Length: 158
Length: 393
Image (tube, rainbow over all chains, first blue to last red; front, side):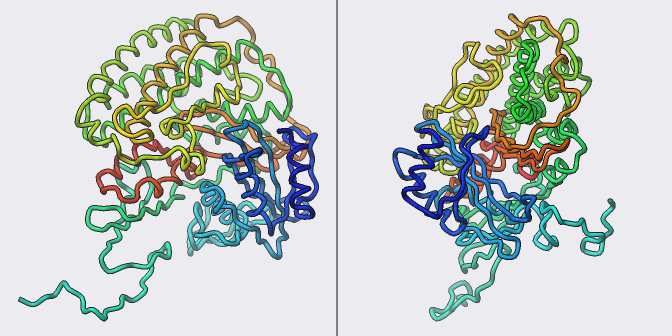
């Protein structure tokens, strides 16, 4: 199924929850609403014509315009087609619906995005930091992150 | 005799919580396996909830080796400088990491790779796959109490490292595959020595099969243990031998082709449940053993037909891809290694995300080890073949 068909189907089914799309990009992407992520992903996984059963990658993003976001790279083992989804949220209210109920693999990826970008995944079963220590201040991969001079009383050497 | 062990019927345990927020029940025990434990293959801490010898739950705690690869990558002054960092992610398969990153940047730049470079990259990646699987198999043998195969595996891995050393001077972290080419051409006698290695390596494989694969004790320890069903494997996006061990016929080298894998004759190996159930530890182990055989075939075919040429002709003077983003995946020894690179048109990447196969494969651990014995957990962790350098990045 081509990206255009996927986009048309999603648009017909979910209306406003499906936003802009760039279908002529190197890897076509579709923007979706951050409050209906799970519903849309569930549909993409369960509908036999899409059957996106494999979540390749889930990456947090800090966009130049100051918004945070998440990029999902989906793949279908059955049909061998791909699509990229994007969601965005504001810095002041960094909430995105979790998709870990749809794909088990999203659990750790979302924890990583939470750890690095401070994006809160609503309905996530176990949202804790994963790579940094529990007491680490701030979210390191945000573009405005400053490396603290001291960490737990120890001087950070650089 | 005083009954000290039976609790009164109206006893209510206080809701003590572990760091993961799990409520303690009175008849279970929390046991820490790691961070320094030989069977965790690095600094991994497993928080086990055990009921006697039975594992009720496993909570992996990772991050001890976190060294912010992604942050470093954003702060480099050019794309090429990321490669030494990519080397250090999965330090047992540096060649494959370099190649995966180079593939992603090359896709952004839309450059053509010379024939000779394609051959060299394939040979290096497959040698690296054998070296990596040798460690996986060798250390797995140690986990199961077999010491001899471990020594054989390391002996043969040394010969691969010698080949790498004569090519680029390094034995572990090569910085060899660059964007658009490779850092050095093959040295004299490389082809000859590689052929010798392939010939001798077949004997080692047979020996390991004789001593380990079909050994009854080994089969008893690994068959029907840690069974990972097909649908769970896909739901958790497992990849590599982990996915193929569960009977999914899927290999990125064939199914999402890159390089020149489509020109050679080789087969994707999947688990068939010969010793027990499809998707058990033995299947995962066996997929790795058979993949080494396939890699040997690939290397032999590639060295026999490698063309002449300049290996640095396509290396760009200045890497400045136009704004855009790309996710490129390739088959590292542990599975799908993907790089998501966002370019904003400047000389350094705006964002690099590494989708590390070991990280994703490890996330399924608690699914497959509930109900196992503690000793079996060692077998399960070993069969996942994690490299903590890559899990934590």
